Length: 361
Ligand SMILES: [Ca+2]
Ligand SMILES: [Ca+2]
Image 1 (tube, rainbow, N blue to C red):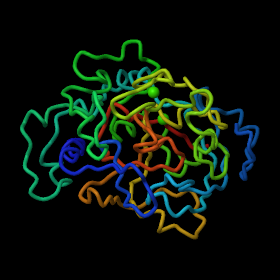
Image 2 (cartoon, rainbow, N blue to C red; image 1 turned 120 degrees about the vertical axis):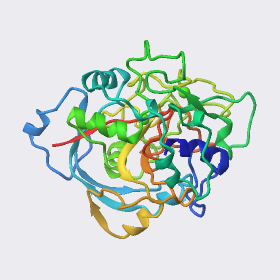
Image 3 (cartoon, rainbow, N blue to C red; image 1 turned 60 degrees about the vertical axis):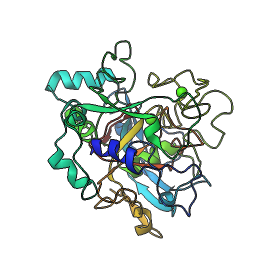
């Protein structure tokens, strides 16, 4: 639950700086036409039937899912073989303009715009957790607030603030707006909001396997969506945090918070911002040991585990988010790696979480 994120930030959250295979999957940095050969044959008719000009065909194939380098967290192991059928994918994150069209057509009210029902969320908290003040149950969402000095990265509550009336229309809270940000990714959307949009658009959220396969862009075992070149080498490749997190941002990539979609080069599948800008919801439940259950097999079109488990917050049911955001940095979560897995309760939105949709052929 979204308030859960805030409470956990205060109580227990940790985010190790040096993720290693041996460590628990304790990272919670969010509060919670290929030119490569495909194993599946795509007909010309399918290639000619692009659903919209803003989707590309991801040609199905086989890939190794999971950890590529020493930055990988425990939950990225073991690497395992996955087969994915072809599908269409949005070339960019869903924008404010696209989400506004959905809201205008349907009257949809997002999770962050609604008050929190304590009777519902208390079941996701450790037993005995006291009820917060009523004012903390009013519509709100998580907003990033930089510090003015270096801080211990083990306590995210230093830079996450539970801000009243922050939502997709007011990403930075009361008084802010999305004016002139129509082509920025929509943020403060919960998993439920993302699913509702997808259903309206006749699409669906990608599975975690589809997302990672698409992010890899046909490269085998590469660390990033563009290959293995260091993030900081050459031209800016993605919207991330550059400098000392969370107090100094050098803005080499040009953006402090979100960037307009398609600001950086796409990957080899023509997908923009698979690394960075905003985290993207996937359909799957998150389970820290899920990859162990499929190790040694070749699994086809996996839809993830049947239930969620994160040892850091065992009462919370979480969905997967992928790709990192403008807040990601190597010292912190390196969320822009292809294999990096994040987990978030489905009603949690924040200023750096959005989504993109896919569609079956
Ligand atoms: Ca940036
Ligand atoms: Ca992204």
